[in-house]
Structure formats: structure tokens, C-alpha cells
Amino acid sequence: MYKFNYQRPNSVEDALALYKTSDDPKFVAGGMTLLPTMKLRLAQPSDLIDLSCVADLSGITETDDTITIGAGVLHADVAASKEVDRRIPALSNLAESIGDPQVRNRGTIGGSIANNDPAADYPAGVLGLNATVVTDRREIMADDFFTDMFETALLPDEVVVSVRFPVPKRAAYVKFPNPASRYAIVGVMVAECDSGIRVAVTGAGPCVYRFTEMEEALNKEFSPQVTGEIACEPDGLNEDIHASAEYRAHLVGVMVRRAVAAAN
Amino acid sequence: MRMKVQLSVNGRNIEGEFEPRTLLVDLLRDELRLTGTHVGCDTSQCGACVVHVNGRSVKSCTILVAQTQGSQVQTIEGLADGEKLHPLQAAFKEEHGLQCGFCTPGMIMSSVDLLNRNPDPSEKEIRDWLEGNLCRCTGYHNIVKAVQTAAKNMRN
Image (cartoon, rainbow over all chains, first blue to last red):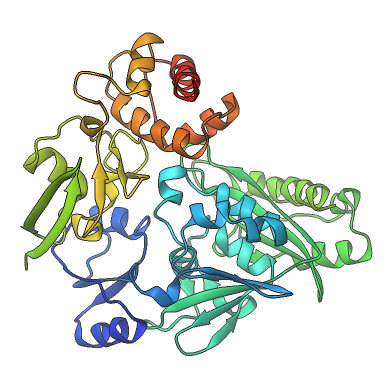
């Protein structure tokens, strides 16, 4: 790793103030992506501003129709949360499927969505469940949040405070993991929300996306059979040593079908 | 710029000034000479470097000493009670849960975390839990058996 300065503020205000006075800072939460990236010398921040002691980013709260997860909540704590499991079991399963136990003991939901890895699980959860990302200065709908590969609507100094999930009528997350990294080769969140069916796909393309043709078909009839009638095209999908675009396209269809069957 | 960090390692108070880029595993191995914690891949995949920070298993190659300020760290050296092995250490020995032994400290630290949360895990739960610990010798069967044996012994 290149040298850097390290700061650990206790409040969002202090974190923002430190950001302003540093040359080329980066926020870090669990560091499960950032630290390996820095070890490879692919990132060289002048300052790491550690958000793990910011109390405002912690905790899971529940209302009649929402679950709000603090940005600093660990994957392991989302997976173990009785509230999340009772209200949105699909989200608790998603958290349990991330990486391995040690990654889940460090990684956070805020860090995952701010990083927006094309193969990360949480982006599919946030987009599929129509969540709202709450930052230090505004609220961003999931549809507007994930903009491109490793790109989000966040401004450079903007801090995710929490993510608010409306409780869906039913939902399921199914993924085909890379057996080594456990990242999604393809992961699909299917949810029935107030606005109708949502299908969010991660791992397949450069950025998580909604599969709108599939949503329309499932809105007419929510059954695994219907999913086979919608073509999954390989155009624009990712291609790497793990899977071709054609294979990923095929997996999208299979994962949607399985998710619909699991949600039914 | 070096920074002051205070933490506890196997119950021993450690205070020092560290470069912010110092990894926990480097403090443990290079400065404290606790070389039971191994570095396998150094890319947070293999799990040979698993230790506990505040009771949770983490990969010590992917956490900064700075991030452990005020924490309680436990390594494989902190498990045994004097000459008496921890039930997981004893079970790995008993069930031949190792061949070369490189992955073993991480396997055991990871399994301790599992049994603390779930004293009676199924075989599937053990295999799922050990997803982040790679062994290139044993084929995992005896490792799983060792965890089952330890779980039974710890319950009795």
C-alpha cells in the first residue's frame, strides 16, 4: 500500500469537515473492497476517513411499512437481524449470501452500495426492493442511485447514512455465485412492491439493472412459467473468464425463474 | 505520519505508534512474533490469517491496526489454556483435520466463531461457514469432522 493518513471521526459533520481539508481523501467503512484495492496499488488516497465510529450510521429500525438499515450495519448483522428476517426475509438471505463470514463481519451495506461493484449483491437488493438511499443531505431513489459501473449518484463528499426499504408483499433473491469469490455471476432480486413487480439483476451487466420486459410479464401473471417466455439477450452483458455473455444471459432467465418460484 | 494505537492481543495490552498502512497481521507476526497467524493469499480469500476482533472472526490481512483501536484481538496463540488445548485444537488433532497445517490456525479461529454463535451446527452449516477458509490438502472432510467433534465435546 502507498502511504496515507488515517482519521476516525465520530460524527458525519466531522467526517465532512475532514474530507474538505484533505487532498484526495476516501471514506472507508469495512474496507472489504477498498483495502484490497489499495494493497494492489490501484487506489492511492491521501487520507482514509473511517466511518465505522459514526454513531448515526448504525442500527436497524422498523416502522409499519419500512425497514431502515444504517449505512454502517455489517452484513452479518443484517443477516442475523430478527426484524429483517421477519419483514424482508429476501434481504436477510441476500446478506447471508455475501462473500464469507469474515467478509460479512466487516463489510457494510453503505460501503457496498457506494462502491457499486457490478457483481455485488446489495445493489440488486436496493434496486429490486425499491429502497431509498438516505445521505447526509438528501434522499435518492434506488432507480436514480446506481448510474454505471462503480458509479453512483453520490457526490464525492456525500455520505450514505441509511437505506430505507419498503416492506414488499413478497420477494426473493437468488444468485449463481462465483464459487471462489462468492460474487454474483448473476444475482436476481424479484419483489412485489406497491408499484408492482420489480426484477433487479446484478452480475450480468456493467451495472445493476431492472429487467423491465420481465417485470411486465410478471405483472400479468406471477409464475415461474411466464419467465421462460421472455428472451434474455446477451447484448451488452459482461464477459470474462468466469462466464460468457451468452451464459450470463441464460443464467438471468434461470435466476429469475428460481426467484419467482421462491417468492411465490 | 505515525499514529498512536492501543489494543489488547490475547489479553496483553499493546500500545504503540504505527504507520496507518500497517495491517493487523503484520503487527501480529512481525512485531509481536505471533506467527501462528499465517498469510496465505494476502488478498482476503484464503482465510489463513483469521483472528478475532471483539469476538468476531475477521481476516487480519484486510484490516488496519488503526481500525482496531481499543479492540480485543484474539489469535490462535490465545486459545489454549496453558498446556490444555482448546476443544477445537484437540479435535483437529484427534480427527486428523490437517495435513500440512498451513490453513489450520485460520480454520480453527473461524470455527471457534461458528461454535460461539451456533453450538450445534449441521454439516451443511459447517461447510457454509468455512467458505472463507481454503485448505489444499485435506479435502475438508476431516476438518468438518473435527468441528463436529469439538461441537459435541463443548456441549457435553
